[in-house]
Image (cartoon, rainbow, N blue to C red; front, side, top):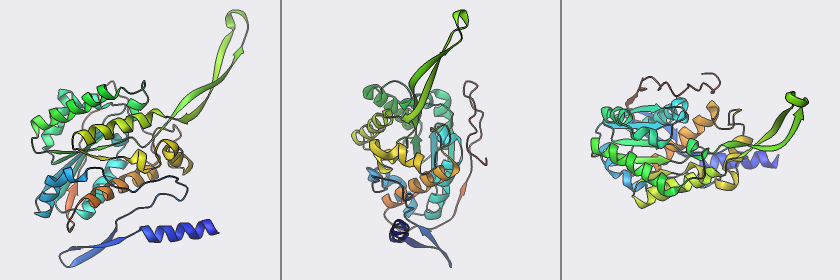
Length: 304
């Protein structure tokens, strides 16, 4: 009973309603969406170096059209995360157009190839949200220098085509890997086979990837949303998402509820970095395009 009462009080205390006017109409939108009560070691939901988005915020304050594009791996390809980000931002900002494009299994380096740069440049975005890291974390231990060069090349090539663009990186939220726990044999002679038992454990390499992204952004005055640290960091992020029932059964991707929570948090973090009034009115659309043949579609989110 005490835990339930504490959760209710906590929820009431962190949910702040801001009245946003659109002519004669007004509606309330939450500024802070709380984590589930089971989450441990969470941090304040905010951007690092959000002031680097000042050119975007200036256009918003001038009621000028603003284009935001979200690119990334299967978390973005799955639709729910970017759609929620777009819907949340459009609840705050005027004349905001939101597009997104993701590729299953993609690393950041996939998007600095010419076809992806052309795709981004065709949208002429004011802000590009860049969400990679989960697949990098499932590779070998991250080489921060090499990873930094990848992010540098990606941003430079986009900047060459879109000189006035701003960037916002996000860190991977957390995932699990399979670890071998034992083995047993079946059969005899030529039919003898060895089988291995495994269990899923938090992917500790996510911490290294997240730190690499944050360090690169800090060194280059680029905004970053460190959801890995915000959601619990190395000690708790992976288990927080899993224990709250927000992860898919593969423990890499998320259920619709998990992506929706992440999308709202990202949109709210961007709004917190914005200094000024907000109004409504915008449009959303999805970028259509075939996934490269080497990438297999991933349809894991239930209900979609």
